[in-house]
Image 1 (cartoon, rainbow, N blue to C red):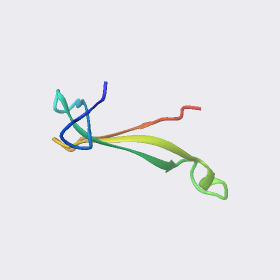
Image 2: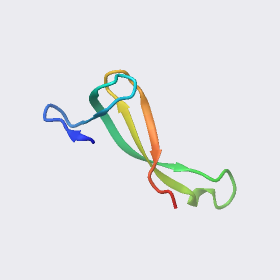
Image 3: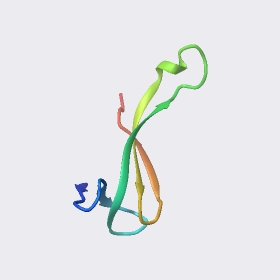
Image 4: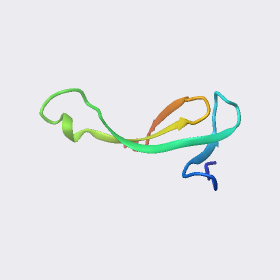
Length: 66
């Protein structure tokens, strides 16, 4: 489970590479899916992106599975 860190504006979360809870930078990005074409710009989906501040491991997970 993610927790806030009192030292900085980050989140501590478990890192699979480091094997411990580390400080992560967490953001939400809109990713265009569905290839190209006239309607491609309407196929954006939110992804939760997190990056370990210790080892640099970066993971993204689609938030909307509709």
